Length: 373
Image (cartoon, rainbow, N blue to C red):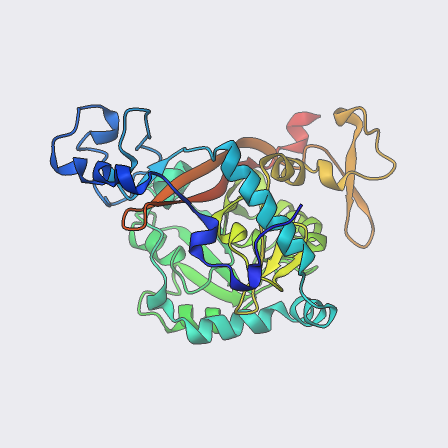
């Protein structure tokens, strides 16, 4: 299968016109009165609310897609999927060089340091939607919640931890914000919102054999992983999942959001960016992986890491080995509370183009082994 020349790939190659030129008058219907249905409910059609209301604008057959700039839960058509596959096949045919693959994988933190040196905290938008998407954050930050600990992995410039602290009403809350970029941690330390009573920021690599500074096993109530797991090489997933498992209390939860397979960011990758299947290097040297839903289930359940001696036909008898002593843990490592695909269709009304975004969002809960017994 052949695809476009990704060395010259631009946005017009990754999107498809929605209507022909002769039908362009449809784009003007927004000024002529719109039939009332839920896509046009005034409570849903604001450009932004606080927190932003996800998943509430549906594209129905009678809708004019050019009425809004974005629609929720729109599946790509078969033609779109075929085009995606063609472009990804072209990416495979023009991979990153062996030299670049080695240097980008050897010191990934160096490239993130450069990224945060070039993009200060003002570059990023605060994630004000977190408590809405992950209600457990509302629980642990509420008045009288008691001593609670949140670990944010991949804290970046603080655009997740600081909004949480801003809304916090729990005097006994502690947030550990970790990133393997020293520059990112420096940005958090330099913020006026950095209050040592409620937050501690440190350099830590989730794929290292050590736990985060200041934390011990079974001490964390909530782990936040928002667009960080995708920065890891697939060979690092097992250690990362093990570290999260170790640090969480029984019944503790992972709040997860990351890139999904077929996202616009993947489809529009240029020549010389493909490193492995679904794994790329961006132009700034940072790495990114695009996940499938079933793949993530297997990772967090532990199925992907099952021990060679496990009974693969019986989940109850299966286990996964971790650490230098090959400690065996029964499956599941995490109960999959929820794992959904968040799709969005973005519209360029001037060029009459459509662009598909795709993210994975889930909640994973650490089981209590004593209860299982």
